[in-house]
Image 1 (tube, one colour):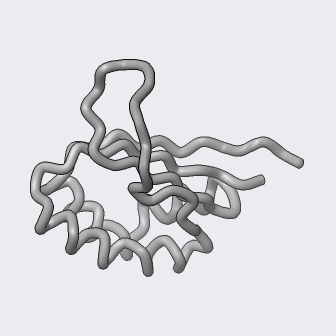
Image 2: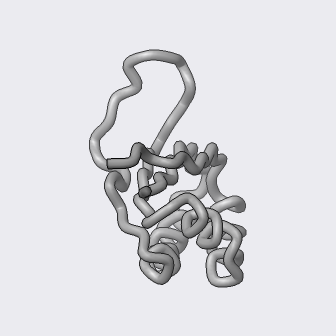
Length: 97
């Protein structure tokens, strides 16, 4: 069953984050992932957390999403993101059909 990566980001350096956006796509695709939401229009309707960007990814399954997040390919890209944005990221297993 599919798994979803949900990331809430507070961007601290727009230039570095632009480089991250350019680099991250191929790492996601290499693990069969795809974007469902990528910084589209959103509104916080409950809560008071600052959020600049929302990203939702879909992967074939939970294990593949974890392998992507822990991969050598994503590691330097993740380090770049960590240097320019405060992030909360979760991996959640979807519902079976």
